[in-house]
Image (tube, rainbow, N blue to C red; front, side, top):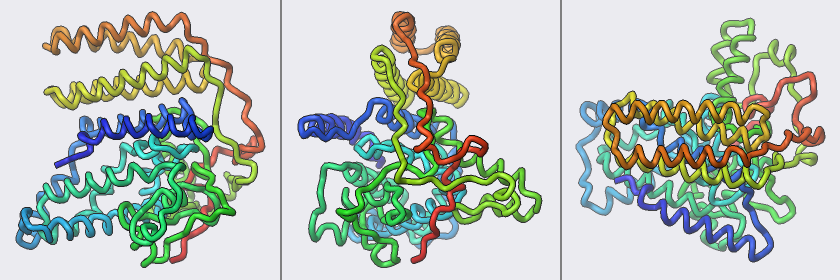
Length: 431
């Protein structure tokens, strides 16, 4: 059973409590633009099942049917304990290689792009992890652990990880030695040299202690959150694809065919020598780092929050409705377009208004097709109300001019290309 959907009300309440607590203590860790960006990525991650075809699930079926040991008893406590421990062990290696191999980092990077650290960061999830991530859990099926047990412990593991994404909980004594905590997970999200590529566990921190990847949070080294090649954008499409794009560019530019292939499987930070020579990228100076935080007009802030509510409502409708695969893809594309155009407003893009009108025209077309395709009348009425509210918002929207970048915070020179996490020369991890 996937328990995550039942935890959503708890997630919302916890985020509101953290926000209120931070304001009351004069240590607010939230920004509207960063928080909405993270939540947009979270909703897109939940909606990806409407466009992916479940390749991993089919392989799990084949393993269970033809290669696994006899199924364990799902009613026995030992099955659940073994599954909980083994799931986190598999997760540790997926997570670790997700930082050490570029192709896996490309799928994981979205979770690390936030330059704030709060509970919205926990929901900032990838939409491309389905490509290879399922491979790491095959051992559970080989051992005969029932699929419903795997899914349930997986959702419990994910729910546990939610609460560790906060700056407000200090170190927890003996608990730090066994379990993942906010303190040791803050280390994982930091880009400081001493913290890079550490603390991969989801539930248990003992794997990191056993395999040499543990690093304690140090009082003299406050974590600086984000990635070494800052995205400097709220665009979710760019957030999900920029490392893949960088890999494809390096592969295309490499002269040696072996380097062209190696780009996709190399350790994070590796680049073909000839490409690195022709297209050098500077290593950023963390001491000059500043958060990406373009100005937001009040009307744009309210509009962005309204679009977040609309995207969540659309996701709820999709999860509780029956429709064909093409219809699911269309609704997913509408969700993606809404998040992207909202990001343009938050970034102060000059073309935000024109592109948003195009999105609304496409939405009207979808509603018109839905009217003839038998969509629920309530959904059609809600969609019409959404269009009306957007039209009322438009005259008030004024996107501020994009801020000139602070050259001290930029990790690249004017004549070089933007960095990606795959191109940072990240210090290699040695266990």
